[in-house]
Structures are given as structure tokens and as C-alpha cells.
Image (cartoon, rainbow, N blue to C red):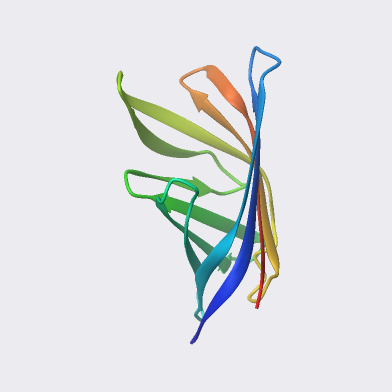
Length: 138
């Protein structure tokens, strides 16, 4: 087991479906990295003070890396071999979401970056294309 405080850079791009709107987010902060034999976990606080925990499983199944992003009220699970599902609470009520993972990179036991490209759908309606990248160093 290894635990350490590290510097991180978070980049996220969103291209909303059915519009030309795009959002880009960038954050530089520190986080706590925990590396275990079966998974690694990084916890940090976003620009709004919300705790974010990212777990990745380098050996979930041979050739099948997957990643989880946890926030206080929901989580997203990314698996390139199959769709995953989540529920997202909005002021209008709970939205059931389908996550279509297109690519996951950097889930080796000791990576210096991690990235996920994915789409989110609500029912048959595509909400957008998303790209999440995390870079970290001592």
C-alpha cells in the first residue's frame, strides 16, 4: 500500500449534443493518492469544494480497464466493453443516465495520467460527448 499527497491537473471538455455549445473546465489542485494491489484511488476537491474520488482498476479483467468517478450524490462508472448506468438528481427530479465509454487510458498500476472519453444519454437522447483527463505528479 502506498499513500501520498500529489499535485493534480483536471481537464474536462463537454460538447453538448444538438448544439454548438462546448464547455471546458481546468483545475490545478492537490489530492490524496492511494495505491493498492487491486485498485488505485485519488481524492480531491473541485473548484466548488465538492469532494471527488476517482478509482481505477488496472486488473479488473484482463484487457478491460475501468474507472469510477464518485461525487457526494452520484457516481459514474466507465467500462469500454459495455454501457453502464447512473442516476443523477436534478431540481426537476432524478434522471436515469446511460454511460457509453469510448476510450480509457492510463489505468496501469502507477500511471501519471488518466483519461476517459465517453457519451452520456438519457433514454434515447444523447446529452453530449465528454472527455475527462487527470494528470498527476509528486
